[in-house]
Image (cartoon, rainbow over all chains, first blue to last red; front, side, top):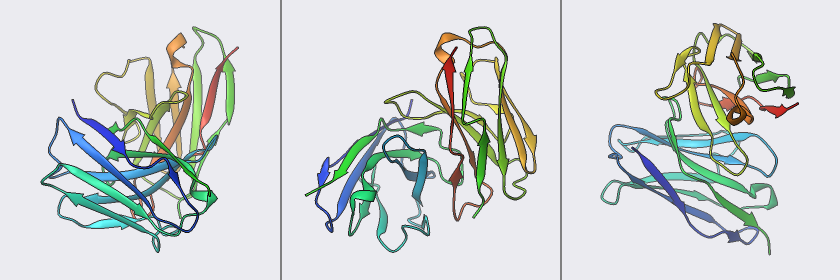
Length: 116
Length: 108
């Protein structure tokens, strides 16, 4: 059973950088796609981007200039950084296994609020 | 961008009812369509992949159909635990993965 767990600050100031980590257990991070998906309060799901175990990445064009997703295979983790955040980036952030493949396993989600 | 439009946006039904949710893509996506269920405060749960294939462990009362631009998710006999929000998602264009806006299924 794959288990994903997001971690990181729940409050980020405007213009600063949001950083989250997803720790994967029960499966190797190798040979899979790993994604970040977010959900603004009361809204639908927005795909942020994915990485593959080779290190290749693909990002939502609307966020591409501000997003980096990276892998740490030694820790079986992958991470999200989002620069220059505004209130519009306030959301629950989910990590998930999938990208080109369906999102078959999800973390519980973590709320990140952008506020001074 | 491939836009995914679900209908209805919300739906009221009773336990035992048969319900159908529709998802329409703005262009043909073959069968690259997945369905998810989300309950309040929880992560989405993966239900169906490639339009009609049930994920392991998903009850057989759930079914999916369609290809091209028009897809449906059907629940044959609603159970209390099925009241949730359902999302479709296209994986045809993986340069921009998109979800439908969601269909909220409520108890009548």
